Length: 173
Length: 142
Image 1 (tube, chains in turn blue, cyan):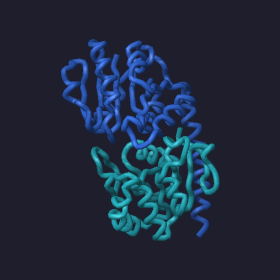
Image 2 (cartoon, one colour):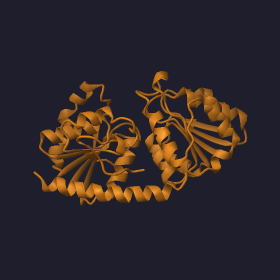
Image 3 (spheres, rainbow over the protein chains, first blue to last red):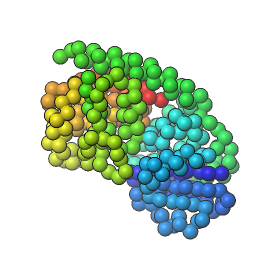
Image 4 (tube, helix red, strand yellow):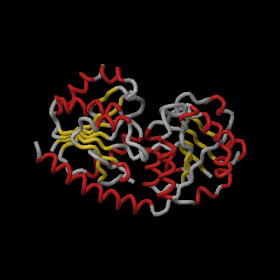
């Protein structure tokens, strides 16, 4: 099993560090990669031979790691969520919480709830159930339901409306 | 039609690119934030939060310069605060401006979006339940 963990690039996310550590300990034969973001304890993560952790991978490296992963475990950031849905990549979300200083507000919780509602992708508020879901191994088999077609249809419709609006805007002065 | 497209690095930038793919426009010029591994834009601003107003104010001349130099028919931003800044410069220079609030804001329009509502030509949300008054829903990227 190859898992990519992605904390986002703006703030530290110690709870995801914990998840990564727990999985690395429990599954020495799995291949884990962690884009830990700024302020992560890279040293604490380095003793594990099954884990490659870095604050930030460059865009090319990251997309290669992404393509290789059987499962992505991510903060509820829209960049990663869109990439997973567009490419039908199985993923799990751990939204950042404002009360733990993980973000400025709780929009990631709202995002995770909404994405979960529409695409049936699981999200977690706590470390332990997320660790269990990852260790269980079945998460990697759960593709986002009908995502590619749905996204295509949504965008076609949006594009039409958007271009009509812009045309109207250009016509007015 | 020439469009100046602005977004911070990360999810905002990804949304801007997806939006760009939907547009009928001959010419697109990109603005993004200078941090880290970001590439592919013509102009860059330093990233800041809408709460750090002064960091926006000091970059306003830079935003003016971009808009003057590019002279777009339309400026589009998917956020966040740096996009708001360029939109504001565009408003002052009498350009058409379009704010597309991030799909991440599904319960409430972002603070930047609420400010954009005050001056942007059009403000879009990607959640139908948030459309009211000047804020419209015309579809979404997901």
